Amino acid sequence: MLNELDARIVHALAEDARRTFADIGALVGLSAPAVKRRVDRLRADGAITGFTVRVDPAALGWETEGFIEIYCRHNTSPEAIRRGLERNPEVASASTVTGEADAIVQVFASDMRHFERVLERIAGEPFVERTKSVLVLSPLLRRYSSGSPT
Image 1 (cartoon, one colour):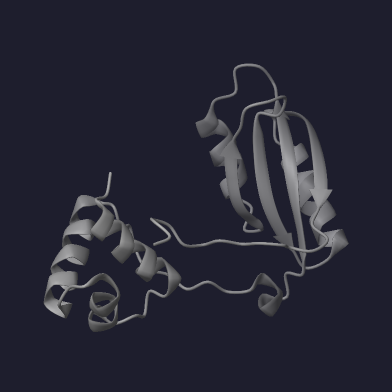
Image 2 (cartoon, rainbow, N blue to C red; image 1 turned 135 degrees about the horizontal axis):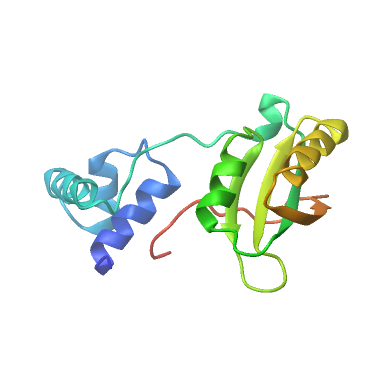
């Protein structure tokens, strides 16, 4: 678990990974070299796994978003579900969940037909017993940052 200072650094990077160490230092009360040392340690320890860019899926032509609940045949491992889903570039995220469904999958597609094709591919996986899907009308809140909000 991160200490409070490291969590604040991670949060600052999660908001904008292009922030300078000096800028982050000003936010958390450290010098730029001290922030760099902490970031290097967090990377070495595996707390920070990489840096990336967030792209609006609509800018790439993926304007339809939905969630698919997957109900699996008995004895399906999470690894089998992951292997079956990773072949679909439209899958943005997938998690096993509590409740009736075994997993929930976030999908981005170019349009309804495209979403339907993805749904059919996922439903056709040998481990899938049935699916249930919902489409997103308006995203209300998306948080990409991690760590303490302070």
